[in-house]
Length: 277
Image (cartoon, rainbow, N blue to C red):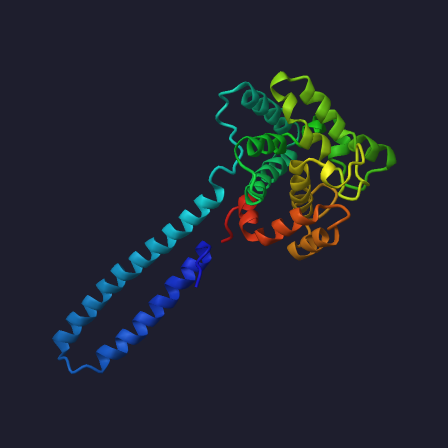
């Protein structure tokens, strides 16, 4: 049995406790001990129960903590360590985005964590993984230039509003090109709305002409948008969101990116929202 959450740990505790109490009480009741000896035996049994279940809880909780730490190790955006021009610029833009629209910031952070996790599982390493990390954090930076009445509109966008929203990849690229430290990290911001079949925007790139980081992020970005509450919609169920990803294989999404995401879904979801209770 695999204990992957606090809820399962508590269940294990209850099961072990019930078995211990039931079996040990029956054993003592059937013994030939006198009243004094039976009282001592019950006291010893109680202390053994406390020690044993305490050790069990510690072991299960420690195992759960190790698994969560391994899942998250190195995969969260490192905003606190602004020790390079790129990190300083990244932090400044992230802060600006958060001040403008907190929901977009939270979405960006989740998408960045999961995209880096997905890239690791795709075998991306070292310098390229760092490029994907920074690019993922910046993927929606162009929304800084999108008017609030469009970003926060509770209903469907009209044609003019949709055209302005669809400019955010180009606006993001233009913004990043003006910052020396971030000029090399424009590809994800620019290309994350391209589609595998070439019907995306802004350039209509197709297949492997779309940068790998953008293809990975596209899957994560859509999934997080679907399962999260937005001003214009309620969150979708996981089943419905995953069905949407499967239906988009070969048209909207890179088939290998979707297959990898689905194969590691439980771990990647934990990177986004934490371990379930």
